[in-house]
Image: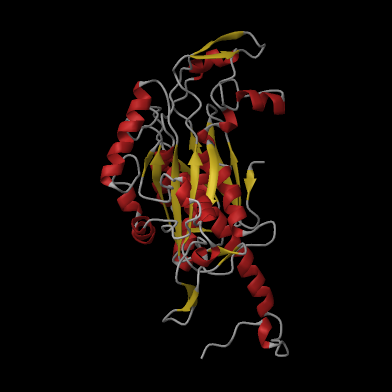
Length: 406
């Protein structure tokens, strides 16, 4: 389906080479100051042609607010957003009339619908994510103003080039029974999650906020590009100041909604939150996040291997997660494959494509995170408002409620 969200609902439309792409946003609170520039900032971070590491397709991706905003203020009615496609080249895809591109969606879309877009990836193209990024920018502005929430994503790996992170070191048989292992995340990586800013991320074309690692990533992407090939990578995202209590167990747990959102992004293949797969190697006695009372009176945790979510509900700590993006499927290197009718042949795809998607995926990840948090906040606020209208209950045993702070 093309709609995401329960109370903050986003419907995207458009294909790679149609006249325009965009979104309809329903459920945005009224009274939010909003301009086209608020949306354009994130769209410009996502747009193609930013550097020699991305596709050369020349799209300005200028957003046009169609409805739901007057005199720079949201009305509470549906917001329409439109971005024109201006640099389409459908003829670049004539070879896909005969060949389904290996590991692309050409074949599966045809199997599902019995018809497919005649050029490009249609709805499976990353052009579709323009609507997501635009909607996410609106959600993010509300979250920042109303709750001080910060959402920062950055590239944490390209191919085998990793930022200091949760990558497991080489192991030997002697390590298997050794529980005195290092932390699931390096101290440098944990410090980065607390301090990293978008300004630091955007200093580098790879969007990896570490000079030496970014330079190595650049070389790896260029090597793939020169070989007419592609390479994958990972994006890490941190959410700060998200209040405790968000998430709807059991099927709509917070991390489940995050995983849903992230794995709906084109080219994604993996999702992990907190210590993730690395945390499976750590005993509970070392992995558990002990509670502590902070100076402001709130309960917090001394560590954060849970990634800010416990029992599917946010606990007030920073939320961090990582998404894996595969190597882009469309490459210009010749590949032995088969036509739709099964005839063997060679496909060397044309068109303009990213040799690595992760630098441009950063604002898409941020947008989908913002949509999840916005929707969950509205749901939780609706619950709390409904409860506040009831007379207080004073007969419950103390084990059923939070203690009164002294």
